[in-house]
Length: 619
Image (cartoon, rainbow, N blue to C red; front, side, top):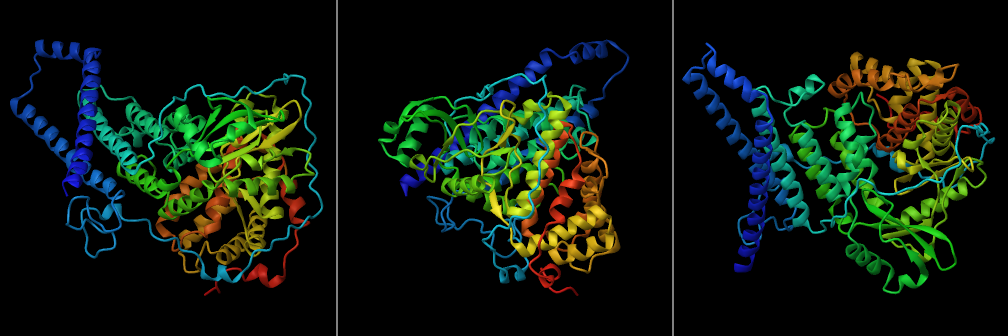
């Protein structure tokens, strides 16, 4: 009992130290702002003017400030309790205490109701009666556009390195990760309190949108706190941050998008000692006997692992991806904690991340942490694209691959961020190839790499190849689902609104009992997505307004939707929308209609019944 009390005392002592450090930091920031503020001079002039402030006004302001501080304190107590609960044992008791703690399954409302667990994903029960076909059909080949040999492209070799990342140990214990999120919660609250005070005296941040102006949490300092915490914690929390960074500026404000850019480009990396411990535990103590040279500093660091360049004894240059310790075991807690913070402080717009989407993301992240699974999909894509003249997949080195270490052929190329200044014809070609691949993955292979992170694609101007990386988010789709989904896309391309409704009900997007307002919004959204395939001329992704127009429909669909979208749509639409955003970033002009109709004209349905009876029976 005494040991448990000491452990609990140590945890709360650490939180107290964090709070003190955060308060000290906020005091220093406030003093700095005041020292360099022009408000001091204004107040001096105000003191010599005829304008006076009554004692009652000062009293009211002080009372208001104290009330706000008390409210912040109560909210942080609730939040910290919620974070601590994720580390408790299944017995539901705090270490050293006999009293049961809050249980989300208990009846009756408590102060923690707002942090209730993610509800289970609603999936159509009829999906189970279909089986996945393991065969891959090869229709008439899609002939890609030849690579443009522009003279303005210099011969280059990509120089990949971590420029903004720092070496920091990954918190691998539950207590360490809880403390990280707790520190973030305290910092956000104190930062918001400081910002509110500065606004009262006319020295608040100058923000762009009305939503940001009304939210004192969306300050430069707070956004930096979020980025710093995500880069240090890594794992599932950082993965969500990377997803935010590739959203369109019409979905996420440019201010937030810019600050999350560092999250996508590079996380912090492990110290050499911690990294070697992971490798030895996965490959054994003699792993170095297979390697002639190993770069201690990684050239890439992502949400789940970091990547090192190495040379094998036979001369092959490889990339070794090493998983961060503890991230696989902390996925559920990390996503729950981060979503609690982001929703609590109103960082995200409503409807961007539904509870069902977070549940799907949790399951997908568990799969991404299995590097043996990723290696298998990498080999599968290498086989599927073996005859493709454009795409290239790195070869896996099996003897240096486990569930926590993945070794593959090192590939040269430019990340797509560096392709935005290339000639227009080259950018058009890259965009066309990405869309061709997306359609081929879905409708031909029925196997898709669903992570559209821009760093997963490398363009090699020397060879005219596009290299595909990171297959951890790969998944397969049932033939019965694809048979109906291609009908839906075809109806969107043809402007068939009744067909869109019909196939949307089959897939489970609609129940058949929706209001006219919901049906109108749904059909409009699908039609907007189909505009690229409906256009008889090259579609200009740089000038498209797809995201902005769909966002106008989101509030209506959120309010009137009767059922969650089918499970397949989360990963599928993430990849398709990400592909559109990639083309938009490149400002590519792509003739999309022929790309789709090459597949549509050669598509073979299982039978008529499977194309019209995918989902539950219509009412």
